[in-house]
Amino acid sequence: MNIFLYRHIARLVRQFFLMSTIILLCYSGHASAQSTEVQELELEIEALKKRVQELQSTNCVKAPGPKKRKVTGNPWRALEVNLSKADVISLLGKPGKIDKWKTGEAWYFPNSKGGEVDFDANDKVTGWLEP
Image (cartoon, rainbow, N blue to C red; front, side):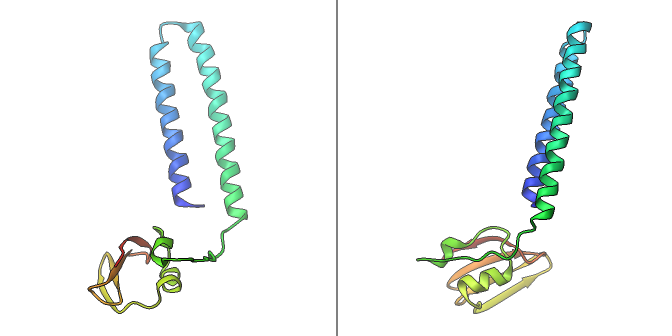
């Protein structure tokens, strides 16, 4: 599953639980109101859990293949965070210079005075500077 989608869903669930806790604390003096609120929140939580399961199963079944990019104009405009090295090579060609560190590396096009693409330790694009 896409890590950004997972993080987004996880953040929504955390916010929902936080809001529900605050609501429960606010209504703690009203037993009947609290009971109704708790039931409504439990239903919403169950609905959210089902939705998360649906999204996870959908993404597992439809695993994305390599992206086919049709680039018109400036290939630097097609760069995105989390692209692989192979995607960058397909867009910009091979780099003229590479600097490596423990935490990642930088590719320079055509050399250190041109554009730069930065990668993390997992070989995914973290950022870039156009020439």
